Image (cartoon, rainbow, N blue to C red; front, side, top):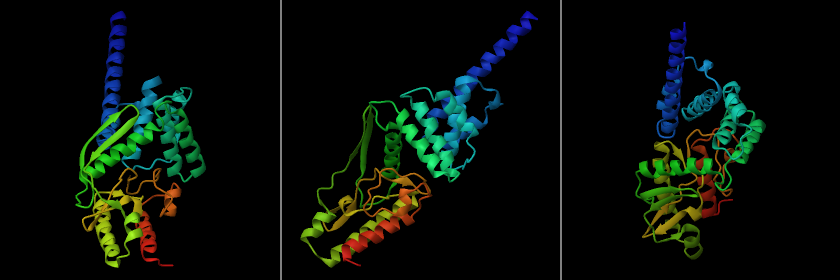
Length: 283
């Protein structure tokens, strides 16, 4: 009987170690390979038997993986496990993430007021001294993906990037021109306005083809240099069909960007229409 007890204890310890290892692997590949993270989590046997931190981390990671793989969850029972475990922890990243993905569930269920409340709670739980780091990391990595995959001659090239405790930095090619607003204050050439539209449309087309939206289209983000116009500042980009956009300017802003409704290329088309109105004075 004693031998059997020790054997059972040894099996439980081994299973616990395997679960923790799987959770660790899923967390590490979540940002770049969310489909792989979801697959790892789905291979955990009997997740309903997990306890304590392992149960909370599984609930958080599974909710995160579903969101990143565009699997719409409208029931908050799973992510609530993580919220209950982490809710009393202040300045804690996992607490912030738990409330963030709770907000995503409410967003999917079209409960906008509850979603906004959860998002605000997520910001409140973020570690102090690292303001909005969860959001900053998300958009930093999006910016890297956009500039790495965007095949256009009318955007700056990504040279390198690095991340520190309080900042995320891109190093891009320098375009030594002036922004389009400054240019058109001194030049009223109609041909150049058409040139701007052609150059910007090419960039937006390439951007949409790789699955992203620009959402911050304005004259200040367009540089004129050597008879061409270049689109810069991709920090506000979001994935097509995203529900949340936090860095778009209010100028030329599509109404959908101010809500939790799904965003698509119509947001950029709306901004382009506003830009045309501004350039050509169409009432």
